[in-house]
Image: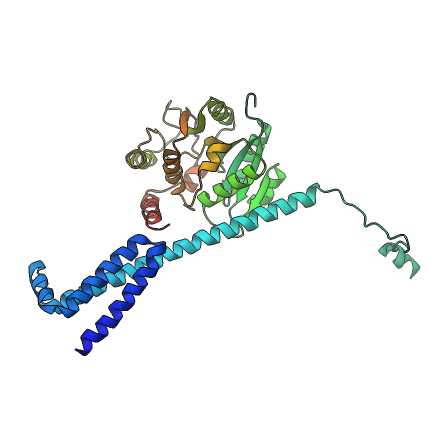
Length: 136
Length: 229
C-alpha cells in the first residue's frame, strides 16, 4: 500500500510535468501523460498489469510498472534536450541582435562627420590639452 | 544590375576563413556588389581582413553556426533595404560571376528564389566520389521530405528576392539550414528556379566542407526541430 501511494504521488507529479511540457513540446506532453496515466492505472489495477505483462512477455506486473517508469524518465530526458535547443534559439536571437547593433553603431561612427562641441556664448573656449602643456 | 533589382547584397557567413576571405570579398566587390560578411565568432582575423577588403562586417560574439550567420546577414541586408540577396560561401569555391546569373534568374516575374545547382551542367571541378554519394543521399531525402524537384540540396550559392528572404526564417543554426531553407521554400509556395553554377573544390574547401558523419547530425537536427515550437 505504501509503495502504491508513493508511486501515485510520483506519477501525479509526472502528469503535472507533462501538462507544463505540453505547451512547448506537445509530443512530449502527450507521451508523458499517456505513460503516467497507464502507470497510475496499473499501480491500482495490478491484475491487469500482470495480465498485460504476461501478454508481452515481461513476467510480473510490477516489472511492467518499472519499465513504464523508465520510459517516462527517457521522455523527460528528451524534453530537457529540447529545452536546451530552445535556449540555444534564444541565445542565437540575442547574439544576432547584439551583432547587428554593434555593426550599425560602428557604421554610424565611421560615417558621421566629427563635430566640435558648440561653445556656450558666456564661456571661454576650453584650452586644448597641448596649449595647457605649453603654459606649464 | 539592370532591371528591377537596384540594391542587391551578397551575404557571406565566415568562420576562421582568414586565408581566403580577402580574395572572396575582393572578387564580390570587383563584380560591383555590396557584401556583408558575418564573422561567426572566428578565432583568427577573418572579420578584420574582410573589412579591409571592403565588406560590412557583423561579428557574432560566439560561434553559432553557418545557418545562424546566414540569417544574421539576411536580417542585416533587409534592414539596408536590399531588394535581392545572394548567399555565397566564404571558402572560395564559388565564382563571383555566378552572382549575375542568379540575380538575372530572380528578375523573371514571379520567381523569388534562384538556387545554384552544381549538377545541372556537370560543370563542377574536382568533386570527390564520397562527396558525390553524400550529396546524392541528401538529394533523395530532400526530394522525399519537401516534394521539391531540386537537383542540388546543399549548395550555398543562391539568390532570393526581398519577399523571398522575408518568407524564410532559419532556425537551424548548423548545417541543417540548407534543408530547412528548402522546406520553407516549399511551405511558402513561392516559385524557384535552379541555375547551373560551377563549384571549384580545392584542398582548402574540401577540408572545410561537410563529412559523411555530419549527415547524421543534420538528420537529428531536422527531426528534433519538428518536435518543438
